[in-house]
Length: 153
Image (cartoon, rainbow, N blue to C red):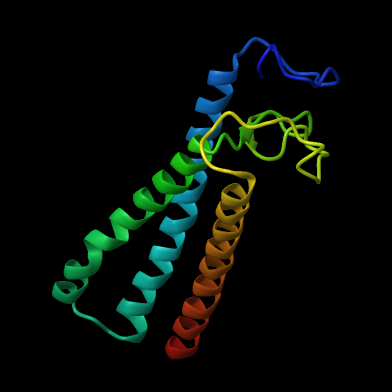
């Protein structure tokens, strides 16, 4: 956690800087979003292989997209979170993450200003897009695995 954060109730080690907090949050976002997207791609792979019974040759044609999409999604969302200065520390979790600063702020007037590009509106749009992406991904997993179970059954 950064030594210059406003929270004094954090019980963990406080030796970082604002930049180390951003780097940690950036790495966490890339990893978590790429992992989530990779799971979605695996669900689609199982759907293609088991339900649609695509051949290995056909699957090899779409396989690069299955590998590139998780990297692209993680990089774009994490990069935009870094650019909009959304990655902040919190006393509630032991790592930096995208959240308001301080964490209890609900209004632009309560929050500390951001150093990144864009406005509060663009940061809200990014948050909504990320949440929509995660919801769509969850639905992809549920529906595709449901279809696979039904077709195998």
